[in-house]
Length: 116
Image 1 (cartoon, rainbow, N blue to C red):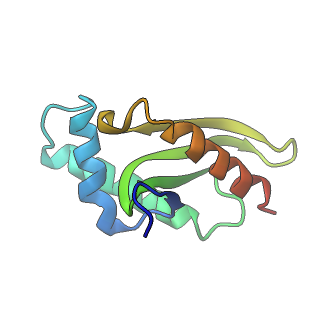
Image 2: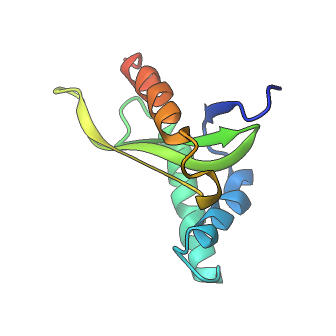
């Protein structure tokens, strides 16, 4: 695998630990208590369920560098008839100012524009 190769992937439950560590890294939370862990796990499960839907209300992919989850990119409030939605992304502080969000967004837009 190429060093620092950026890829997008569908989340798996096994990504929860890396996802939670990003919340601490970015000072979203100071600690991860059981309530936060449970809420994030529910969000992750809902994200995974959405992969099976023809027209989900949101679609998210994990941003990975060298196989490690460093953030995500998401489209929400999707209007399928108008082919519009709100796109957002976030990455861990450690990877800021390295052009990863721009690269991830380009890959994401290509992927969602090819979807039926």
